[in-house]
Length: 228
Image (tube, rainbow, N blue to C red; front, side):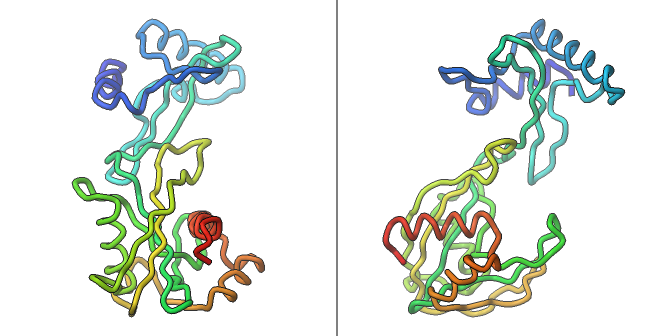
């Protein structure tokens, strides 16, 4: 992608290029400044025998799930360079839902490609454009554990970012009281539902059996609100 195409993308998505007040990494959208930042990064990379193409500002990679940007920035000390980050190409937040049925937490035993292992997790999913976060949460509950309709009461908990160091993707958190559940759609390497009393759920956290950060975030919010 050329610098001009990158700048056009920035104009179409200004919310991704905000420079708030304070001591920050200021995103540079002036072409001359971008070239200066690229030149400085090229020099640093070459000094360490690293590929100089890593200095190029722009969209590094894009598909339907993620967008990887390399921005030109001015660091707090005034030096120029680049910084890389993931953003959500659709812009809509994901959803994480902590479902509880008659005092029991409904978890999924899910194989994750990124970690190459199995995890106990609450239902979650990408946000679909044109749908509210609540509608997305209800869709995920119906698809993953068969909880739907009037038998679902959602409580909005808050918003969380999974890794603020590199990702701008946000997620809306919900607590769900559900009347029924069943293994609705065993797909994407979901082996089974794992349904446990709240006390056992907390023991699984204590014993490091639940290590998914988004599941832990949902629990922390629910606990802080007195829902557990």
